[in-house]
Image 1 (cartoon, rainbow, N blue to C red):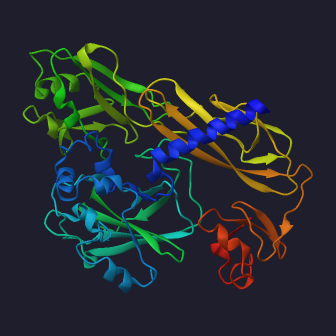
Image 2 (cartoon, rainbow, N blue to C red; image 1 turned 60 degrees about the vertical axis):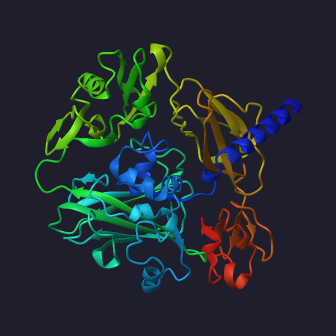
Image 3 (tube, rainbow, N blue to C red; image 1 turned 120 degrees about the vertical axis):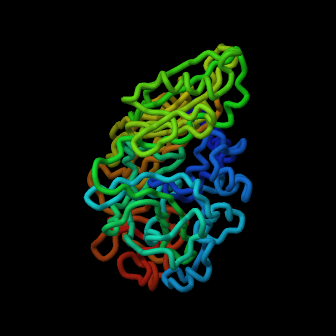
Length: 499
């Protein structure tokens, strides 16, 4: 037991250190990543921090520096009267919709012809829209707008009168089943997905405007602009833009170095289906030359590299920065780096992605195993560190086995996994909620006004069971009864979830 306590103290210290390293991920919020919003696209570029070569993101950088990208999940506005559309339009005025009226993010409002556009091929007249969240808020609602025919994002800042509301929906549960579509940014813990009907007859360029609104007294809402091209009828476009082929980080390459270019599949292991190492010498040090040489080694059944014109993709040999990677699957990912002097493989700077699989309903006293083997790392072996929901003698390794502690009533707990890339020193954290049930079935205690309840506490009231919501709602669980008595109070849904 002494050894266990030492391990737990070590784990807590490690987790607190990680929390201070990445404070923006702890209580941050979310953004649209399908179709990709302006700030998310710019943030995912390999040269985001050094000065984007993408023309639209470069303009954003010149106007607002790196702030819109760093705050990719907080393009937000607090509006207490969020159900009053006239108030929303007053506080987020015309010309400031894409920045949520934040002057520090004003670059997102620029009228530009070069905004990255996602090609939308309607499926039965619908398109997919996804919001990823580092803390997906429920309850909440979404309103999705499409710019009207004739609106031109290249010449005109977006106004409310330019938009048609095409979808509304209220959400109560965030999903975590990423499947073959992992988030475009590591750290997202859940998502909401919507099948949105596209107005009949629409095709061509447009702006999709998404408003994701929390239902709470604070009134925080998130506002994102996604630039899209709606494909007309006929055969769907088989190619998907993964982004710029050669970023500005490759400008420092010199003779004797090697280019390392990879394309990874959409399996949990992110297996390399393209893995090219290309030597650089005096004859090909110009990226227009080595870029074409690398591009020619990529099989067209996986991707084509160049500028897209209709169904054709042609490599631009005079401006290598203009070329993009067009993959046959939207869920593929790419990476390019420099191997100095042709020596060891360079360190991949992408953060790892922690994932947990295991049972969600446990019985007191029984033994269970959770796995972190589906976690993703890009630089070899990962470090694992678990915070279990109960006692355990093992706190590291890619699996966790422990005996659920004794409980006389159903109790909510969180299994947490922190993983650590030992090469780039980056971390990722996953949380996995479990319910520990009494071995004899048991029953929750009766709710009592004024009692301090922890997040996840389960109580009984008027013949039904309720679970206390997580922070920041937890404090409301103790009452007063007129507002927060489970199933009865006028605002009980702000504090409790009915089981």
